[in-house]
Length: 290
Length: 206
Image 1 (cartoon, rainbow over the protein chains, first blue to last red):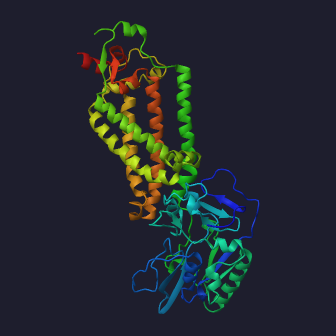
Image 2: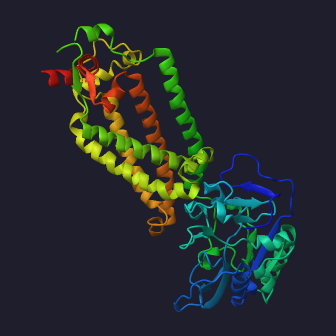
Image 3: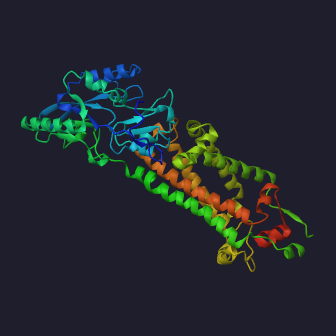
């Protein structure tokens, strides 16, 4: 939920233009995985600012805690022990959460008008009062992020602190990060900073370092700096080339338009047939001779 | 038979079954169309808003499937396709122009009705199966997201097919005078039976 209402770029299940009198600066949250120490301050800040409390889970023998995203946990650190090259153990820690896609699969799948909006600054936000709990956003998301609440049936995810951003503050996770691994600013500045980090990482032996800003979803408004940008799967299954599933595109973009035309054609066909041919009646004479 | 002789076409329990199917179909259709396309979203207000439509829709759908499967089971013996049906189909052009002379003596249902039953049966089986895949919150979480993606595509496409079938069925019933009475009061005139289903008339009238 957010304060903005005049800078809406896109609105779910809406066929007319959304209020867009105000255009805001495109923003990005840059998560530098190479600087993350896995302290989970971002998770705590997220809980604090959004006033969320997940149920206490069980230790599963790994550092991931809680084990997965939920309606109460909008961001989770995912820890991966990997061997990118033989004999070279690396501990990769990725802060998982909504990527705020420029082409959001959740928004395209959502059937409830205004339950998902995309602001001109790039933030994709859920408006839970309009959410009907169908779970189509889960189906549409290429990153498996939205979670339905078992309590109220509504979908929840990271808002990129749209309420803070609307009043000129940075997201809570960025504010609290002790190593500066989470930065927030204009898209231009963040891309510039990220490029510098990539150069630095390459100098330090990470030849495949790069920025994760996948073109399959027209880029994201949460980006990662990765030491192994050529193998994002190393970071607990970050998809290499994410995009809206062709099935979702088929369902929402092609099929439904054609089907609406088909339904209309069936109705018109019936009317035209009746007007030109009239009813199929049993003639009077037939009744008489029965 | 006298000229006003009436022939029973559908028993009271058949009629009840048909209208339970129809009622469930209309409820499932109206509650589901809002999720088919935003242009129909206003229909969810009929059920108390989007959330209520989402909650109720699968139950209407399950009811539709149940009543429809019972219907198909009891009508199946009259739905087998016979050689006369294919002869009848050759006159399709004439039939559409209300030229009903020289038609082969077909049984209780014509080929159009028989094909409609088969299409609707297939579509409703697919709707039920794909509907379970995406039924929140009870079943959907048990299935992979990829399977649910297939589910929504199959569900939307089968819904389209079943809606076209519904439009064709309702129009054909309206176009064919006397058909609606056969499903409300259960009877048709002897002339109607001879005119539309000569084979069936012969069997009934002897």
